[in-house]
Image 1: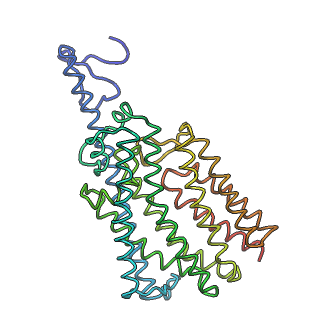
Image 2 (image 1 turned 90 degrees about the horizontal axis):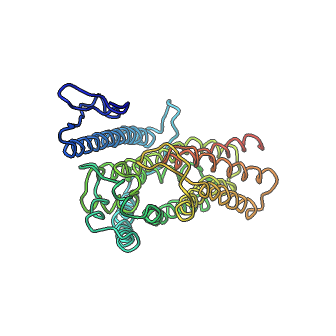
Image 3 (image 1 turned 30 degrees about the horizontal axis):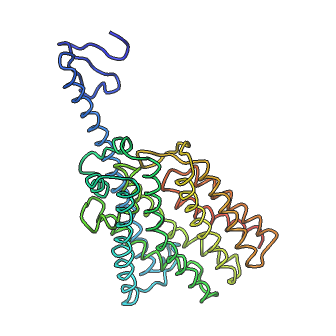
Length: 386
Protein backbone atom coordinates (compact mmCIF):
# COMPACT_ATOMS: atom_id res chain seq x y z
CA UNK A 1 0.00 0.00 0.00
CA UNK A 2 1.56 3.33 -1.05
CA UNK A 3 1.22 6.70 0.66
CA UNK A 4 -1.60 7.99 -1.49
CA UNK A 5 -4.37 5.65 -0.30
CA UNK A 6 -5.22 3.62 2.76
CA UNK A 7 -6.99 0.28 3.12
CA UNK A 8 -10.36 0.16 4.85
CA UNK A 9 -12.36 -2.75 6.24
CA UNK A 10 -13.85 -4.96 3.52
CA UNK A 11 -11.13 -4.25 0.96
CA UNK A 12 -12.30 -0.69 0.18
CA UNK A 13 -9.83 2.11 -0.38
CA UNK A 14 -10.14 5.70 0.77
CA UNK A 15 -8.40 8.56 -1.03
CA UNK A 16 -6.90 11.22 1.24
CA UNK A 17 -8.07 14.19 -0.86
CA UNK A 18 -11.68 13.20 -0.18
CA UNK A 19 -11.20 11.58 3.23
CA UNK A 20 -13.87 12.39 5.73
CA UNK A 21 -16.50 12.76 3.02
CA UNK A 22 -17.51 9.11 2.88
CA UNK A 23 -16.16 8.61 -0.66
CA UNK A 24 -14.42 5.32 -1.35
CA UNK A 25 -13.46 3.07 -4.23
CA UNK A 26 -13.98 -0.65 -4.41
CA UNK A 27 -10.79 -2.35 -5.76
CA UNK A 28 -12.85 -5.29 -7.04
CA UNK A 29 -14.80 -2.94 -9.32
CA UNK A 30 -12.25 -0.26 -10.22
CA UNK A 31 -14.11 1.25 -13.13
CA UNK A 32 -17.37 1.64 -11.27
CA UNK A 33 -15.65 2.91 -8.14
CA UNK A 34 -13.66 5.50 -10.09
CA UNK A 35 -16.76 6.80 -11.78
CA UNK A 36 -18.60 6.97 -8.48
CA UNK A 37 -15.74 8.76 -6.74
CA UNK A 38 -15.30 11.24 -9.59
CA UNK A 39 -19.00 11.98 -9.74
CA UNK A 40 -19.25 12.42 -5.99
CA UNK A 41 -16.24 14.78 -5.86
CA UNK A 42 -17.79 16.83 -8.69
CA UNK A 43 -21.05 16.98 -6.78
CA UNK A 44 -19.25 18.14 -3.64
CA UNK A 45 -17.44 20.85 -5.59
CA UNK A 46 -20.70 21.99 -7.17
CA UNK A 47 -22.44 22.03 -3.79
CA UNK A 48 -19.65 24.18 -2.35
CA UNK A 49 -19.85 26.66 -5.21
CA UNK A 50 -23.63 26.72 -5.01
CA UNK A 51 -23.40 27.60 -1.32
CA UNK A 52 -21.03 30.44 -2.22
CA UNK A 53 -23.47 31.68 -4.83
CA UNK A 54 -26.30 31.50 -2.29
CA UNK A 55 -24.28 33.47 0.25
CA UNK A 56 -23.62 36.14 -2.36
CA UNK A 57 -27.35 36.39 -3.03
CA UNK A 58 -28.22 36.75 0.66
CA UNK A 59 -25.48 39.35 1.17
CA UNK A 60 -26.64 41.32 -1.87
CA UNK A 61 -30.25 41.11 -0.72
CA UNK A 62 -29.36 42.40 2.74
CA UNK A 63 -27.19 45.18 1.34
CA UNK A 64 -29.80 46.32 -1.20
CA UNK A 65 -32.47 46.32 1.51
CA UNK A 66 -30.33 48.49 3.81
CA UNK A 67 -29.38 50.81 0.94
CA UNK A 68 -33.03 51.20 -0.03
CA UNK A 69 -34.00 52.05 3.54
CA UNK A 70 -31.20 54.62 3.83
CA UNK A 71 -32.15 56.16 0.49
CA UNK A 72 -35.78 56.43 1.58
CA UNK A 73 -34.65 58.00 4.85
CA UNK A 74 -32.58 60.57 2.96
CA UNK A 75 -35.51 61.24 0.66
CA UNK A 76 -38.26 61.55 3.27
CA UNK A 77 -36.53 63.04 6.29
CA UNK A 78 -33.41 64.63 4.95
CA UNK A 79 -31.42 62.83 7.66
CA UNK A 80 -32.31 65.48 10.20
CA UNK A 81 -30.39 64.86 13.39
CA UNK A 82 -28.66 61.81 11.99
CA UNK A 83 -25.93 63.37 9.90
CA UNK A 84 -27.26 61.74 6.72
CA UNK A 85 -27.09 63.99 3.62
CA UNK A 86 -30.42 65.26 2.37
CA UNK A 87 -31.67 63.95 -0.96
CA UNK A 88 -33.37 66.38 -3.33
CA UNK A 89 -34.47 63.57 -5.64
CA UNK A 90 -38.17 63.53 -6.48
CA UNK A 91 -40.05 60.31 -7.22
CA UNK A 92 -42.59 61.52 -9.76
CA UNK A 93 -43.95 60.58 -13.15
CA UNK A 94 -40.84 61.85 -14.92
CA UNK A 95 -38.37 59.91 -12.77
CA UNK A 96 -40.45 56.73 -12.90
CA UNK A 97 -40.77 57.02 -16.69
CA UNK A 98 -37.02 57.38 -16.97
CA UNK A 99 -36.45 54.28 -14.84
CA UNK A 100 -38.99 52.31 -16.90
CA UNK A 101 -37.33 53.40 -20.14
CA UNK A 102 -33.91 52.51 -18.72
CA UNK A 103 -35.14 49.03 -17.78
CA UNK A 104 -36.84 48.35 -21.12
CA UNK A 105 -33.98 49.63 -23.24
CA UNK A 106 -30.85 48.63 -21.34
CA UNK A 107 -32.06 45.43 -19.67
CA UNK A 108 -34.41 44.06 -22.30
CA UNK A 109 -33.53 45.49 -25.73
CA UNK A 110 -29.82 46.23 -25.30
CA UNK A 111 -29.34 43.06 -23.26
CA UNK A 112 -31.09 41.00 -25.93
CA UNK A 113 -28.85 42.44 -28.67
CA UNK A 114 -25.64 41.49 -26.85
CA UNK A 115 -27.11 38.18 -25.78
CA UNK A 116 -27.48 37.45 -29.49
CA UNK A 117 -23.96 38.69 -30.24
CA UNK A 118 -22.48 36.37 -27.64
CA UNK A 119 -24.45 33.40 -28.99
CA UNK A 120 -23.08 34.09 -32.48
CA UNK A 121 -19.51 34.38 -31.16
CA UNK A 122 -19.79 31.14 -29.18
CA UNK A 123 -21.09 29.36 -32.26
CA UNK A 124 -18.83 30.81 -34.97
CA UNK A 125 -15.70 31.95 -33.12
CA UNK A 126 -15.46 29.40 -30.29
CA UNK A 127 -17.22 26.56 -32.15
CA UNK A 128 -19.41 25.68 -29.18
CA UNK A 129 -22.26 23.20 -29.65
CA UNK A 130 -25.89 24.23 -29.22
CA UNK A 131 -26.22 22.28 -25.94
CA UNK A 132 -23.07 23.82 -24.47
CA UNK A 133 -24.31 27.27 -25.48
CA UNK A 134 -27.66 26.60 -23.86
CA UNK A 135 -26.05 25.54 -20.58
CA UNK A 136 -23.81 28.61 -20.61
CA UNK A 137 -26.81 30.92 -20.52
CA UNK A 138 -28.63 29.16 -17.69
CA UNK A 139 -28.16 30.18 -14.05
CA UNK A 140 -25.59 27.30 -13.77
CA UNK A 141 -26.86 26.72 -10.23
CA UNK A 142 -29.38 23.95 -10.90
CA UNK A 143 -26.86 21.31 -11.92
CA UNK A 144 -23.05 21.04 -12.15
CA UNK A 145 -21.56 23.29 -14.83
CA UNK A 146 -18.43 21.50 -16.05
CA UNK A 147 -16.03 24.33 -16.95
CA UNK A 148 -13.00 22.03 -17.10
CA UNK A 149 -14.77 19.90 -19.69
CA UNK A 150 -15.51 22.98 -21.80
CA UNK A 151 -11.90 24.16 -21.65
CA UNK A 152 -10.76 20.70 -22.76
CA UNK A 153 -12.93 20.95 -25.89
CA UNK A 154 -12.65 24.64 -26.78
CA UNK A 155 -9.97 27.34 -26.84
CA UNK A 156 -9.67 29.11 -23.50
CA UNK A 157 -8.36 32.28 -25.16
CA UNK A 158 -11.34 32.40 -27.54
CA UNK A 159 -13.73 31.91 -24.65
CA UNK A 160 -12.01 34.73 -22.74
CA UNK A 161 -12.25 37.03 -25.76
CA UNK A 162 -15.93 36.18 -26.19
CA UNK A 163 -16.56 36.84 -22.51
CA UNK A 164 -14.80 40.20 -22.83
CA UNK A 165 -16.71 41.27 -25.95
CA UNK A 166 -20.05 40.34 -24.44
CA UNK A 167 -19.28 41.96 -21.10
CA UNK A 168 -17.75 45.18 -22.41
CA UNK A 169 -20.17 45.54 -25.29
CA UNK A 170 -23.16 45.11 -22.99
CA UNK A 171 -21.86 47.54 -20.34
CA UNK A 172 -20.21 50.19 -22.56
CA UNK A 173 -23.38 52.06 -23.49
CA UNK A 174 -24.75 51.76 -19.95
CA UNK A 175 -21.57 53.23 -18.46
CA UNK A 176 -21.38 55.96 -21.11
CA UNK A 177 -25.02 56.94 -20.57
CA UNK A 178 -24.67 57.10 -16.78
CA UNK A 179 -21.44 59.07 -17.13
CA UNK A 180 -23.01 61.55 -19.57
CA UNK A 181 -26.09 61.96 -17.36
CA UNK A 182 -24.07 62.98 -14.29
CA UNK A 183 -21.56 65.07 -16.26
CA UNK A 184 -24.21 67.09 -18.09
CA UNK A 185 -26.07 67.69 -14.83
CA UNK A 186 -22.91 69.22 -13.36
CA UNK A 187 -22.20 71.33 -16.44
CA UNK A 188 -25.76 72.66 -16.65
CA UNK A 189 -25.88 73.50 -12.93
CA UNK A 190 -22.30 74.43 -12.02
CA UNK A 191 -23.31 76.00 -8.72
CA UNK A 192 -25.37 73.05 -7.52
CA UNK A 193 -24.60 70.28 -5.08
CA UNK A 194 -21.96 68.03 -6.73
CA UNK A 195 -23.42 65.03 -4.92
CA UNK A 196 -26.94 65.55 -6.28
CA UNK A 197 -26.46 64.00 -9.77
CA UNK A 198 -25.01 60.92 -8.08
CA UNK A 199 -28.05 60.75 -5.79
CA UNK A 200 -30.31 60.91 -8.84
CA UNK A 201 -28.37 58.09 -10.49
CA UNK A 202 -28.50 56.07 -7.27
CA UNK A 203 -32.24 55.45 -7.66
CA UNK A 204 -31.63 53.77 -11.03
CA UNK A 205 -28.84 51.70 -9.49
CA UNK A 206 -31.13 50.43 -6.71
CA UNK A 207 -33.80 49.39 -9.23
CA UNK A 208 -31.13 47.58 -11.26
CA UNK A 209 -29.96 45.75 -8.12
CA UNK A 210 -33.47 44.55 -7.31
CA UNK A 211 -33.95 43.33 -10.89
CA UNK A 212 -30.64 41.45 -10.69
CA UNK A 213 -31.73 39.79 -7.45
CA UNK A 214 -35.14 38.85 -8.85
CA UNK A 215 -33.57 37.13 -11.89
CA UNK A 216 -30.56 35.60 -10.09
CA UNK A 217 -31.71 31.96 -10.02
CA UNK A 218 -33.84 32.04 -13.15
CA UNK A 219 -32.92 30.52 -16.50
CA UNK A 220 -35.86 32.11 -18.29
CA UNK A 221 -35.61 34.45 -21.26
CA UNK A 222 -35.46 37.70 -19.28
CA UNK A 223 -32.77 36.27 -16.98
CA UNK A 224 -30.70 35.07 -19.95
CA UNK A 225 -31.02 38.50 -21.56
CA UNK A 226 -30.13 40.32 -18.34
CA UNK A 227 -27.17 38.14 -17.32
CA UNK A 228 -26.22 36.42 -20.56
CA UNK A 229 -23.75 38.78 -22.21
CA UNK A 230 -22.06 39.87 -18.98
CA UNK A 231 -21.79 36.54 -17.14
CA UNK A 232 -18.37 35.12 -17.93
CA UNK A 233 -18.14 31.50 -19.00
CA UNK A 234 -14.72 31.42 -17.33
CA UNK A 235 -16.37 32.08 -13.95
CA UNK A 236 -18.25 28.78 -14.17
CA UNK A 237 -20.95 28.19 -11.57
CA UNK A 238 -20.13 31.50 -9.86
CA UNK A 239 -20.67 33.67 -12.93
CA UNK A 240 -23.83 35.34 -11.69
CA UNK A 241 -22.41 35.69 -8.18
CA UNK A 242 -19.45 37.52 -9.68
CA UNK A 243 -21.67 39.84 -11.70
CA UNK A 244 -24.04 40.46 -8.79
CA UNK A 245 -21.13 41.48 -6.57
CA UNK A 246 -19.92 43.88 -9.25
CA UNK A 247 -23.31 45.56 -9.67
CA UNK A 248 -23.90 45.78 -5.90
CA UNK A 249 -20.53 47.39 -5.26
CA UNK A 250 -21.05 49.84 -8.09
CA UNK A 251 -24.28 51.02 -6.48
CA UNK A 252 -22.39 51.23 -3.16
CA UNK A 253 -19.87 53.55 -4.82
CA UNK A 254 -22.71 55.83 -5.88
CA UNK A 255 -23.94 55.87 -2.30
CA UNK A 256 -20.57 56.69 -0.71
CA UNK A 257 -20.09 59.41 -3.33
CA UNK A 258 -22.96 61.31 -1.71
CA UNK A 259 -20.98 62.30 1.44
CA UNK A 260 -17.67 62.44 -0.46
CA UNK A 261 -19.28 64.65 -3.12
CA UNK A 262 -20.56 66.97 -0.41
CA UNK A 263 -17.04 67.28 1.00
CA UNK A 264 -15.60 67.95 -2.45
CA UNK A 265 -18.22 70.67 -2.91
CA UNK A 266 -16.99 72.39 0.23
CA UNK A 267 -13.37 72.38 -0.97
CA UNK A 268 -13.39 73.03 -4.73
CA UNK A 269 -14.95 75.91 -6.69
CA UNK A 270 -18.06 74.90 -8.68
CA UNK A 271 -16.39 75.21 -12.10
CA UNK A 272 -14.06 72.32 -11.14
CA UNK A 273 -16.84 69.84 -10.27
CA UNK A 274 -17.06 68.41 -13.82
CA UNK A 275 -13.26 68.00 -13.95
CA UNK A 276 -13.23 66.14 -10.65
CA UNK A 277 -16.07 63.90 -11.79
CA UNK A 278 -14.25 62.97 -15.01
CA UNK A 279 -11.05 62.22 -13.08
CA UNK A 280 -12.92 60.05 -10.56
CA UNK A 281 -15.42 58.21 -12.75
CA UNK A 282 -13.96 58.56 -16.25
CA UNK A 283 -10.48 57.35 -15.33
CA UNK A 284 -11.96 54.27 -13.68
CA UNK A 285 -14.16 53.40 -16.67
CA UNK A 286 -11.36 53.83 -19.21
CA UNK A 287 -8.59 52.04 -17.30
CA UNK A 288 -10.75 49.13 -16.09
CA UNK A 289 -12.08 48.56 -19.60
CA UNK A 290 -8.61 48.65 -21.15
CA UNK A 291 -7.34 46.18 -18.56
CA UNK A 292 -9.87 43.55 -19.61
CA UNK A 293 -9.69 44.29 -23.35
CA UNK A 294 -5.89 44.19 -23.61
CA UNK A 295 -5.57 41.36 -21.08
CA UNK A 296 -8.05 39.17 -22.98
CA UNK A 297 -6.64 39.87 -26.44
CA UNK A 298 -2.90 39.87 -25.75
CA UNK A 299 -2.22 38.91 -22.13
CA UNK A 300 -1.05 35.63 -20.66
CA UNK A 301 -3.23 34.93 -17.66
CA UNK A 302 -0.52 34.06 -15.12
CA UNK A 303 -1.18 36.41 -12.20
CA UNK A 304 -3.36 34.53 -9.73
CA UNK A 305 -5.83 36.65 -7.78
CA UNK A 306 -8.66 35.99 -5.35
CA UNK A 307 -12.26 36.37 -6.41
CA UNK A 308 -15.66 34.87 -7.14
CA UNK A 309 -15.01 32.59 -10.08
CA UNK A 310 -13.61 29.19 -10.94
CA UNK A 311 -10.63 30.68 -12.81
CA UNK A 312 -9.17 33.79 -11.18
CA UNK A 313 -6.18 35.09 -13.10
CA UNK A 314 -4.98 38.40 -14.54
CA UNK A 315 -2.20 39.33 -16.92
CA UNK A 316 0.82 41.62 -16.91
CA UNK A 317 -0.35 43.11 -20.22
CA UNK A 318 -3.69 44.03 -18.66
CA UNK A 319 -1.94 45.66 -15.70
CA UNK A 320 0.24 47.79 -17.97
CA UNK A 321 -2.86 48.72 -19.99
CA UNK A 322 -4.51 49.94 -16.78
CA UNK A 323 -1.62 52.21 -15.88
CA UNK A 324 -0.96 53.63 -19.36
CA UNK A 325 -4.62 54.31 -20.15
CA UNK A 326 -5.28 55.84 -16.70
CA UNK A 327 -2.19 58.06 -16.99
CA UNK A 328 -2.96 59.26 -20.52
CA UNK A 329 -6.61 59.88 -19.73
CA UNK A 330 -6.13 61.72 -16.42
CA UNK A 331 -3.22 63.82 -17.69
CA UNK A 332 -5.27 64.62 -20.80
CA UNK A 333 -8.19 65.79 -18.66
CA UNK A 334 -5.90 68.06 -16.64
CA UNK A 335 -4.24 69.61 -19.71
CA UNK A 336 -7.46 70.06 -21.71
CA UNK A 337 -8.93 72.02 -18.83
CA UNK A 338 -5.87 74.31 -18.61
CA UNK A 339 -4.72 72.93 -15.27
CA UNK A 340 -1.11 72.21 -14.46
CA UNK A 341 1.40 71.97 -11.63
CA UNK A 342 -0.15 70.09 -8.68
CA UNK A 343 -2.99 68.82 -10.89
CA UNK A 344 -0.50 66.79 -12.91
CA UNK A 345 0.61 65.17 -9.66
CA UNK A 346 -3.04 64.38 -8.97
CA UNK A 347 -3.33 62.74 -12.40
CA UNK A 348 -0.25 60.57 -11.74
CA UNK A 349 -1.54 59.62 -8.28
CA UNK A 350 -4.88 58.53 -9.75
CA UNK A 351 -3.13 56.47 -12.46
CA UNK A 352 -0.97 54.67 -9.89
CA UNK A 353 -3.91 54.10 -7.56
CA UNK A 354 -6.06 52.75 -10.40
CA UNK A 355 -3.35 50.26 -11.33
CA UNK A 356 -2.77 49.06 -7.79
CA UNK A 357 -6.44 48.59 -6.97
CA UNK A 358 -7.25 46.95 -10.30
CA UNK A 359 -4.48 44.41 -9.76
CA UNK A 360 -4.85 43.64 -6.06
CA UNK A 361 -8.58 44.03 -5.45
CA UNK A 362 -10.49 40.74 -5.44
CA UNK A 363 -12.13 40.23 -8.81
CA UNK A 364 -15.30 42.31 -9.36
CA UNK A 365 -14.59 44.51 -6.35
CA UNK A 366 -12.42 46.92 -8.36
CA UNK A 367 -15.58 48.70 -9.58
CA UNK A 368 -15.85 49.99 -6.03
CA UNK A 369 -12.22 50.19 -4.92
CA UNK A 370 -10.83 52.00 -7.98
CA UNK A 371 -13.55 54.64 -8.20
CA UNK A 372 -13.73 55.20 -4.43
CA UNK A 373 -9.94 55.51 -4.17
CA UNK A 374 -10.01 58.11 -6.98
CA UNK A 375 -12.62 60.10 -5.07
CA UNK A 376 -10.67 59.96 -1.81
CA UNK A 377 -7.46 61.02 -3.57
CA UNK A 378 -9.29 64.05 -5.02
CA UNK A 379 -10.62 64.85 -1.55
CA UNK A 380 -7.10 64.68 -0.07
CA UNK A 381 -5.84 66.82 -2.95
CA UNK A 382 -8.47 69.44 -2.15
CA UNK A 383 -7.43 69.52 1.50
CA UNK A 384 -3.84 70.03 0.35
CA UNK A 385 -4.22 72.86 -2.18
CA UNK A 386 -7.16 74.82 -0.74
